[in-house]
Image (cartoon, rainbow, N blue to C red):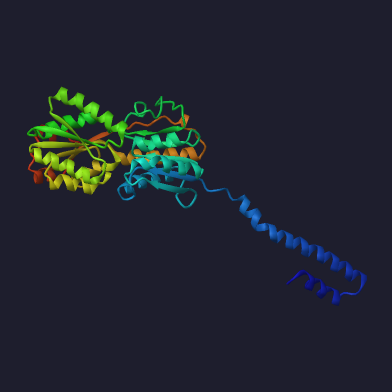
Length: 350
């Protein structure tokens, strides 16, 4: 009811001096009540803390990264953060177009996110680093982050970056040795890398060329910047006859089913950096468990949201590497894995 009508209602019924005092008192109480009601929602809103925002920067696309993203969310949950409940995540996907990463990183900085998560590649982490020196960045890379130029120290990162280096680029030479032993009939081995991811492509190429000379393996380096070129690389190996392929560490090749489908269509014995490929039908894999590394990225992100600094978070390096062989795929490819190689496998998938 409007204030003037309330006052007229009391005035018509109160004529004595005492009654007039009551009207004046009630008028003051009414105005106080109106003022309190008007300010209550603003006060309640002001007392609610703003929900922190995480920027998720990926060089890939959502579907191949479902497992990584789920593991990152698990790590966040381990530190008390759940997306949509007490934290928001802004996603930026480059969809395998690495040249878009700098602009996507700049968008996240302009969005004033509390931390940027850049898992999967040096190229994404480097784009985030170039975009800001103030926003904390949590990376996950397969190569040495010092050699890649992301940090200058693993134990005491001296910049706004820290994260996980899961070794899969650094053990490329070991993968070559395992492939040579598992497929001794192969006359040559092709290394497939993505030249758009310059730093990691160069590191892997250099290491494999050195290892190939030591192991007396004829090495051929092939390039692919999209899935059609990836298919052509498998076709090239198949045309050579008697060749095998080592898949390089790169987010482009995270399209698991597409890539192992190419290997099957062209009957190319292939070793992969990630167990997920072997579990889905690839011949063999050797490397760290990427989902464990992804969960650690979530843990570090949560710790930063709780107030810790990147300088106090040493770069994590996994200690467990796994060699996995899919025996069923070996039969389908006509590849007989020697018994001495089977005995050193950490897991055999039948």
